[in-house]
Image (cartoon, rainbow, N blue to C red):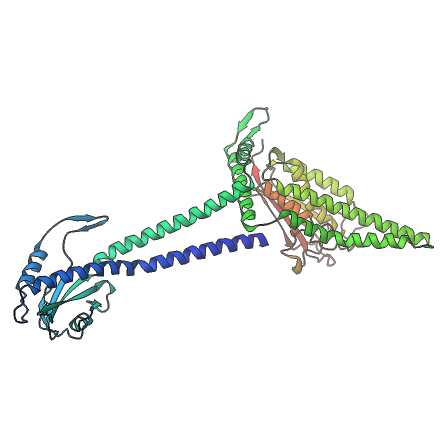
Length: 508
């Protein structure tokens, strides 16, 4: 995973953690806030009911007839009230009255009459002249049976002679808590995703304020193609692939913008690092050439060294320029139908001319074609084939210059893999060492060639990967066990296998 991807994912993770923490805090505060609101209403109602009872108190005796009649008629009352999603048809309040000793003299539920409640907090604190309240479960093992109780003092001649306690089951307003919790989660997720999307869109617009419409239109134009008779046809599949590629390119730009990647600085740093060695070699050779009395053969060797290192620097600069231009392309503007079999045969013929000592076979399992840029596709496959040639030692030859085991040194295979055209280049070289696996596509990373021990610019596979991405394909390089001929113990090297996958189209 690249550094810019890690930075981008880290920013997304920080944002997600922040939103999750905010939602968690909001959800944690919902239930206490609803309970506080319900408790405030209970306090006022309890004070009202205590005042009603105080009207009938005589000589400290607590009359309960009036409150008993009120609750009897209240429980018998039928009504219909729609409170948002809650349909309420009965009263859930309960009440009990205790005397100055904490003994229950009235209970609207009829379950606690005569019991000693003096140790319950709502009764004890209220009898002491303080605010008394408690929350208790009717069934200890059932959290849904929780009831909130609030006490109010009953006075006679300024003396507290009893307590009226009102209770309300938490379950009666628990539906509001559940609905509010679901609403907070929904609103929080929608708001978070909307904010993230808005940030990405703004970053996208800041980078490319003028190119969005033109890029979409260009993507749709690539869906038109000409058949063998020259007639223009529209391919929905090509249009979908082009729009998908455009979306992916836009997402990459947004990711780069959020991650704050500076392409110029990155390229300058990489290019400076790669050119440092050849510049030092050229400078050293030039200083030595200025010394008087240098033998002609040494002067020729240093001059050749200057020419070699200059060529190397020029190759690095040219490759870097090509790769930078390729990375800046968000999509293929012009596409053609490219038949892969003739292209592979042509590339193999060119490789045979450069390396006549190697046997290079092309195996076509199915005649396939792709839509793309012929020049770039040729460069991609050609680069993979060049790597195979440079890392492959020739087979053991007989007197007729044919491999003794009849096996090819390099095999290029074209086959179908689902909806993809699979181009595989397999060689019989040393393969990919363990330390290099995972780094082959890094810029300027290169392995020494078996024969000369020289390294390339290290930009070839990065170039191939960019071409594959532009064509909505993929490329991978790894090890593959080479096929060996019978009786040939000398050829035991592991070979490398490079696979380029591209979206296939129907031929004809």
